[in-house]
View 1: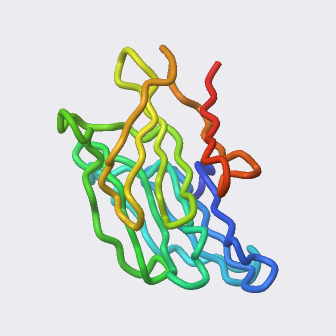
View 2: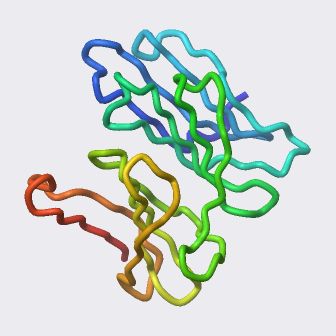
Length: 172
C-alpha cells in the first residue's frame, strides 16, 4: 500500500527513454522505477519498517542517459546521508552529508544537480538557511553560503546558468 508520494524524478531524456523514478512512503520508504512512462512499476530500493533509514528525495543526473546516476537523500540512523547509484538504481553507495568546515550533519531540504554533476543543497542549520555546493562529480561539499534566516524550500538555476552561474534559493 502506498500512502504518500514523496518525490518524482523524470529522466532528462524522457521523450526517448520514458524512464521515471517515484519515491513513496507508508511503513517503509520505497523507490519505484518505470521504463514505460509509468504504466508498469518495479520497486528497486526500500527501507525496512524496523530500519532507521528514511528516504526523502530522489534526483537524476542531467547526464542520466550517459551515466545512469540516481541520487537519494534522507537519513541513516538519524544522520543525513546521500545514496548514489551509477547503475540506474540497481545498487547504491551511501555518503554522509556533512558541513565542510565543522563536520556537522547537513540536512537536505531541497537540492538540484547542475552541469558537471555539481550538487547544490538547501539546508537549515537551526539559525540560517544555507546552500551547500559540491565539486564536479563529487558528493563532498566544497562551498557554502548563508541565504536567509529560514528553511530553503526551493533551488533553481537561472535560464542562462551556463553563462551567468546564477542560482535562485527560495523560502517563505
